[in-house]
Structure formats: C-alpha cells, structure tokens
Length: 446
Image (cartoon, rainbow, N blue to C red; front, top):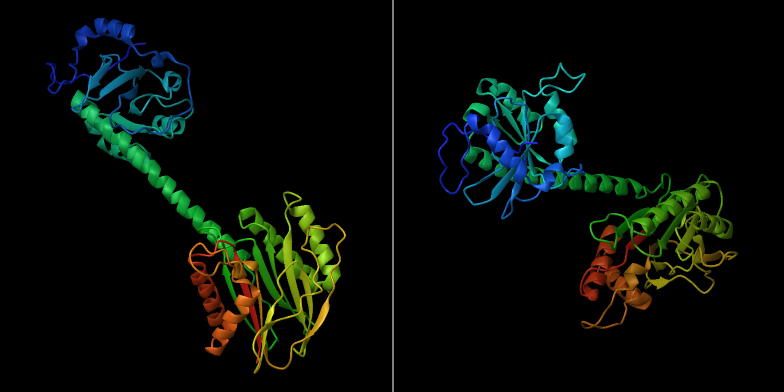
C-alpha cells in the first residue's frame, strides 16, 4: 500500500526543511520507495479509536482516505515549520481506512468525493458521517474542490475540524491544518467533557433536591425549620435524613436519622429509610413496631452487614403538650421551654442503632413538653466537631451544644436563624468545615 503526501503546485524543495513533493510522472518510483520505508503501523491490525494526542513535540500521523488515480499523494512524510514530522498513510476506501485506523493516527484527511457507503447515496456527506462514527475521537479534515465551498462548510458543521481545497493544497498548508485540527479536536473534546460534567452535576443536584423532604404539617400550629449540610464536597445530600408529617388524628410525627458514613450509597439508603418511615407512619405504626420494620428495610437494602443507622422519632400529641420519644442509638433532642434554659430530653431508655442487633427492641417514652416550647433534633455531625486550640481532640459534645444554643436563644435567635447560627458556630469552633453530615430540625410551639 503506497504511503502518500499531497502534490504541491510548485515542485521545488520547500523552505524550513519541508519535504519536497514529487511530480506525477515519478509516482511509481516514489510509491515503491514509500512502501519499502512505510511504518509498521501502516499494516497493523485495527485498534479502537485513540484519544486525541497533543501535537506538541511529537510526530503526527495522518490517515488520508481518497481515491485519486492521478496520484495526488506521493511521498511518505513531510516536516512542518517547527520540525515536527507528519507521517502519512493512505486508504483508498472505507474498508482500508478502518484497517489502517490504528491508535497512533492523530488526524484523518477525507476526500469528500469518495463514493458514499452502500445504501446512503442520497446524502452528500454520508462518507464523512461514516468516518465520524468510525473515529469519534480523531481530528478530521475534509478535502474538496474549491468550487464546492458550500459542501466544505457543511462538512465542518457536521463535525469536521476544518476543510481544505484540493487545488490549493501544498505541504505547508497541510501540515499547519493537521496541527490546528488536532489541537481543535483536543479542545473540543475537553469542552464537551466539561459540558457533560456540568450537566451531570446539575442533574444530580436536581435529583438530590427532589429527595430532600417537604414537611407535611397542614392544619398544625407548629412552626418548622431545618438546616442540612452534607459532609462530602459538592453534594446536596448525605447519609443524614429527616422528615415531619401530620397524620389525620392531628398528631405531628418528626424523625431524624444518620446512616453511618456520608457517601452516595449512604445517602441513597438514608432516602429509602426516610420514605419508608413516612409510609409506615401514615399506615399507623409508631414506636417499636415502626423501628423493627425500618430495621428490616435497612437489612434488605444495605450493601454490607456493617452498615447501621441511628434514629430519633418524636410523636407530638394533637394538643402539643406531650410527645412519645424513641431513640435508636441517636442523641436525644434538645428542648427549650418558655422562661427556662434549653436542656436535653431524657435519653436513658434508648435502644441500639438499627441494623446492629437482629431482634432488638425499642421503648417509647412519654415526655411532657409544656405550653410553649422549641424542640431541636440534630445529628452527631454537629456535636462531634472539635473545640479548643488547633490540634485539640476535645469535641463540642452535647453539653457544649446546649451551652451554645442557650447563648443563641438569649441573643433572640429563633427558627432558621437559630439553626444557621448553630452550624456556623460549630464550624468556627472546629477551625474549618465540619467533616461529617449535619442535619437539624426545629419545631416551635408559641
């Protein structure tokens, strides 16, 4: 198979070390020489399309797909003005092109006059479309006559990096066009990947926002606020989860939980547990029966037996003065009653986290809330932040959190402002971002 290069309109040697191009009457001897010196890659078996490689400081390989009996391409390589060698190989049809498209080819020069594949004769650019499907990650140059400029421009719109006119083609123009096409394809590929990454991030963000709960408190006089901050970078959802609903009897049910870990798998499991809790609550379950069923859900959905989840549920009576409290390995809520300092609700009767013990039981404790109160439920990401000088191993802990909330309540903070201030102060005390997921839920009865 001859290994070619384009015929120049002026045949003397080109300046800057560029290879001379032989006239047509010397085609035969040139092809014999080219065949003897052709790169082994020219006859190598076909390989998957290679990623675009930067043209800087490396030889380039051009695959020419054309069927010109006049012998337009006649020598094995040329040098560009920077001294980069461009090796050239030729395919006379698409079948040969597929065989010669090895992983060292950087650019393809396609003659648009090449016959279209069988069954696609009605499309003027059917051959180009076939090559673009065959080599989606390669730079492609379209070769055509100057009189066919409109078709050449359409080739670029279809996917070619540039076009060249056959009658004006010379070695310098070709080498410059190859380098430009390779770099443009590399830039286009990078831009395409960036756009894909942005779209994927936007889609994930929309999905995660859709998975965050919408509280169902219609008919209740309780005010609701929440704050959520995942520990993993650039995420909207972590392993923490929460929800609040009001059932037909007027009871307000609230829960907050934490799947161990804070990656995407834990986030997905947290969503499943939250949705299961909402369904079971509307079905009339509470206390031990509800938690036992949630444990079964976790056992079926988790990836390994080491995964567990903590949970806190509160069922507030219709009159708002009493509540049933269940703890499954989770820290107890904090309550601030009117005229009194905030304190933790009782937590001595808590049970194990979900998924730790196969036949665990959970007690449901009745607590008095009073007339006017604020109830804050939280995950351990808030209380496990560090405090003290840099390098200190001391944690904020529940006692430190109670003191912090009391200071903020004294300053007159309520609702969303109170939760935002709590997270910000915990982060400041930690000396930087909190590494674990943080979820806060606040219910107020004024």
